[in-house]
Image: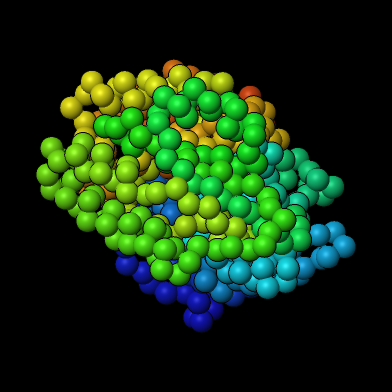
Length: 439
């Protein structure tokens, strides 16, 4: 380990501020070889190791009291292969940088989540996803990855090479090693037309299956304490591009969705009794609009209001019933919920610990403004989700343990067997992984 990238460190906090860690040291390796040396040194010193991204997980996935690896220097595009239609990118590259670089090259990922601040490795390792009839998870777009294991070996994993590791490592929770590069499938850049439209809760739930079937990407937000939702439909378009106007886009995406919403959340935290009235106003503030642009400008939005989140993936056929149960619970409880509830979908995929592994899925995500006590609300929602066989998002608040998760993931044992082989001494363990994966 060289002095150029090792340093003592103070407390590390995640984006939401609900997770804090105090590592012995933090390092920023500048190459795969330096990273391998860091792992060997940590093992010699008897220290655990965790790699951290931008801290957008709400769980302690990346927390450690040992060595914290920052990916600041492992960034950039290694290769664009236009024959294979793939891009290989360093694991510490923020999704925002990847998306803009691909757009300059006339390329795009097929789908993505609704924010792009995360690093490539952080987003894929925790199962970040968007919404889609035919595609959703970012990890499902991975064609190969480079993994540095506990003993300092560098493995290339794909469907053809180290296939049994590739089958589980695309969503690896940082439990198998440190990912240093990811190869994604890409396609020529295309246009999406977004249609955002208010819709009544009863209408959107009654027509949910039809809305999912008719649109490439469908999602909606329900505003608690109201019968109001806001829907978003994204579909490929022949063009021409027609992005939101600078003024109208700023009003919708910054002034209303961030500025005014920040004030509303702060008021609601100070005066909870005002939240239902605020919700009724907020749910009517956003009007219908249609715009067309390249994918990352449609899929993603700025998220400047900080919050804590829990999200569960359910069998898609259970989503409407579960959401109605959540609404009934909120309506009869003294809870005051200032954040909308988000509903998205995903097709089944073949990744062992993907929340959509082996089944068509729907996601129900609940949020509360940062600093607001969330335990009562999240506990009540989690009870509903688990009654439907829900799988918690790995990077979002949950209380599940390995015994529960082994019951809802048929390939759970496949993952833990690979973990036992790659990290028998648990160099990459922490309290969160001990809870969700066992020891």
